[in-house]
Structure formats: C-alpha cells, structure tokens
Image (cartoon, rainbow, N blue to C red):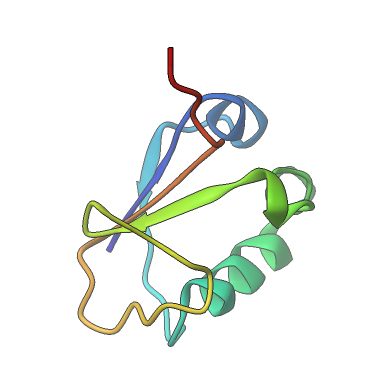
Length: 81
C-alpha cells in the first residue's frame, strides 16, 4: 500500500510517500510498525492527537481497518479560513 506523509510529518520522516508491505490490521497497528522502524518515524508519530489519518482518501480514526486499503495518508489537522 502507499503511505503518504504531509506537512511536518513529511519533514520529520523525510519522504512524501512510500510503498509499505504490512500485516497491520488497523491504522494504529501500521503506526506501531512504522514507529519501530527508525527514530524519525517514532518522532513523527509520537503524538497521535496532533495527527489526522485518511484511508483511501476517507478521513477516519486510528482504530480503522486497513484491510484491502490502497492508501493511508497522515497529516496535521487543518484549519479553515
């Protein structure tokens, strides 16, 4: 699946997107796998309350299933204006 990173998440990880092979069942499981990779991932995902997630371009929660998903995107909350 493609994992996309936006704004400061992208800056901390150093990539805009990557292909990930995972056995994770939920977004939270995927985050745990990513955090275990390297310190830069651990830093980027250290405060999940500061992040939003979309699975296949649908805004969702971290307990959402990613079974069959083609894309998961992580980004900070957006403000209107």
